Length: 179
Ligand code: FES
Ligand code: FES
Image (cartoon, rainbow, N blue to C red; front, side, top):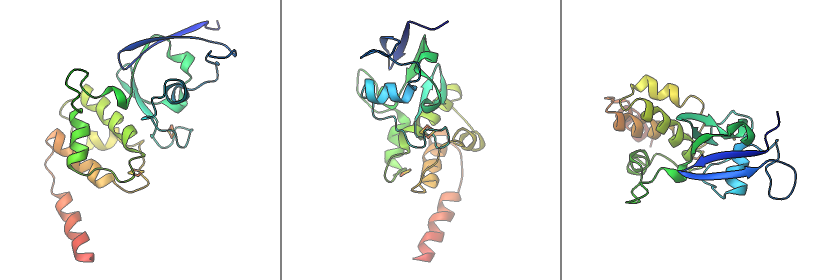
């Protein structure tokens, strides 16, 4: 049966959209990333490949990381969605610990992939506050960074999870030797 409306909670705010082709309505073909970016101006969620391959558009839907370019908004009726804009503390406005750790570790360059990576990491840490290094790498398997920031991303997340590793020092030493 075709839905007449879609109810979503996005970053704690309830929204109701009518479904249809008329002005202001959500067409059945509209993806969640389009709704977030174009309709709600939540442009922290990035759109890149538009085919589920890069992870830039990752948001958390009902507690799980999903690529929002691969989901139709009409399929999200009743869902609880969290985007990168929803991570800061609503009262203190402090950043999420993952965001702060990315800043502390300089875990990005252009930053285009960063919201998607942080949302994948957030879903992991919500389910498992102390993931292993292997679990962190598995959770980020669908997120790609064109700037090759992955080693600082992993450094940030390993530190947050308390994973011991000397691989960063080894990489930094190798870079210094090359210079
Ligand atoms: S834009 Fe959605 S996975 Fe690339
Ligand atoms: S920091 Fe530029 S794409 Fe990842």
